[in-house]
Amino acid sequence: MLPAVVVLVAAYLIVNKFLVGEMQQKQLALFGQHAQYTIQVRLQAYERLTIFVERMHPTNLISRHYIREMSAQDVQLAMVRAIRDEYEHNLSQQIYVSREVWQTVKAVMEQEITMLNRIGSNFAMGAPSADFVKALSEYVVNTESTMPTAIALETIDREAKNC
Image (cartoon, rainbow, N blue to C red):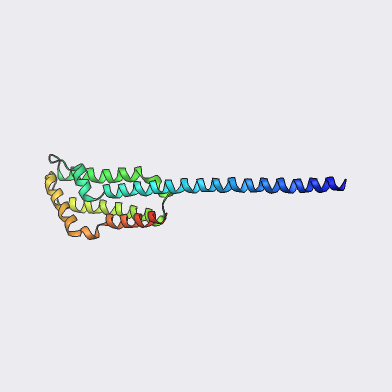
């Protein structure tokens, strides 16, 4: 009877150790897959925010929204609307990036809209869109090294590389 109990206990310990090892391996594999998926989703969020920031740079806004036949106010409003629409489209990305990155992107959006409104306020109703675009282009040339979009891109890039 005693040898049977010893064999039973030994078999139980061996099987238990094997099953615990298998479970740990499966948990580790699952954790690795989850981590890989999380990294992939976060990188996609950084990509989308990078595209958003690039699209709200004044030179890109000009190339996408300048129509000679429009008034200065119409072009300005089209640019502001485009920035807001793009922001709303990317709202969900904030759950995948740090608070610092999201706050930076949001602040840049607000600064770009303020800048467009400030430049647009210098023109009378019905002023040609070419005048607005010229003033916007001059602003970009004079402030290119300190454009808010450049700061946001640096912040996104720095965090994405540490992902």
